[in-house]
Amino acid sequence: MRKIFSVIFIAFILFVFLAPFAYSWGFFAHKRINYMAVFTLPSEMIGFYKKHIHFISEHAVDPDRRRYTNANEGPRHYIDIDHFGPSPFDSVPEKWTDAVTKYSEDTLKVYGTLPWNLDLMMYNLSDAFKKQDAQKILRTSTELGHYIADAHVPLHTTQNHDGQLTNQKGIHAFWESRIPELMADNYNYFVGKAKYVDKPHELIWQIIRQSHTEVDSVLGFEAQLNEQYAPDKKYAIESKRKKSVKTYSEAYTRAYNKMLNGMVERRMCAAVYTIGCFWYTAWVNAGQPDLNKLDDKMVTDPVVKKQDTVAAKIGKEILRGHEE
Ligand SMILES: [Zn+2]
Image (cartoon, rainbow, N blue to C red; front, side, top):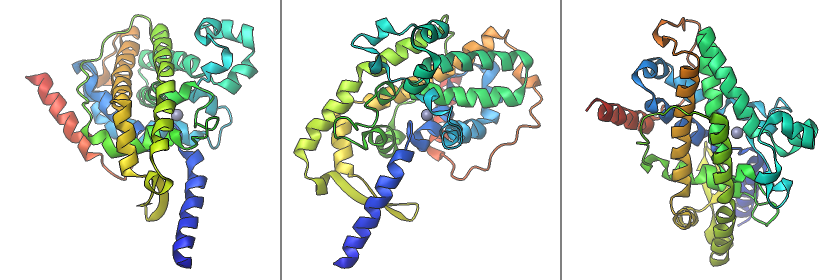
């Protein structure tokens, strides 16, 4: 009996300890999103991106890793828009310089700079294409993908980002890691071909507004479900990388996903599509350089620890669909 208690206690400590490390979509979903985005690209681009697909996928999580070593990194992943009053989208200027004038840079760095960071990343990617710098194109595409994916997560747009204000701590990783890890192999990634975006800056704000409208459902449904489940049914101990961790039970996860009515899949696939559109737009804006002529010998592919064989299979099917 004592042994059981000590296992539960260790698992609980691990859960508490690991929970704050679960930022933004979780590593699995970020890698999957970047991977799938490659298959939205037109023929002039897809060859180069496919060649480096493991780099684009494996390094999708670098911005999250950087959060531990660089204090400036954190705010780039979110915007706590509800900090700025009851009609925040009317209050917060969409242009960085206007927002700084109104609130100061220090304040914006506390409540998050995600939309403006995306403006900057788009500029950087176009610049990389213009310079035909293979290394920079890949790195910036990969990291832009990360931040676009973050913008699609409702909890990245609120001060209550981990349910800490409503006694729902852990909901962040629940929504963006636990659900995709359990379900994402069955999502429909046939999102179509990337399109040119006339005004990326406006689309960025549209995405953030859309994400923010979903916050109430993300929190509200979980609060409702919590009422129906005893703690021993809500949580389960699972082994992950040879460690026991306390996590939301599979039944609880599936019930929550059902209440969300496909929201996680919708946001994840919307992220895939937007990333493709932004890569394509940056390339067009740079004058459509020939990517086949890039000197990419210096780009070293990372060691892929675990192949995403499901993503690779779906990618092949998408390509076949394009040929037909
Ligand atoms: Zn992130």
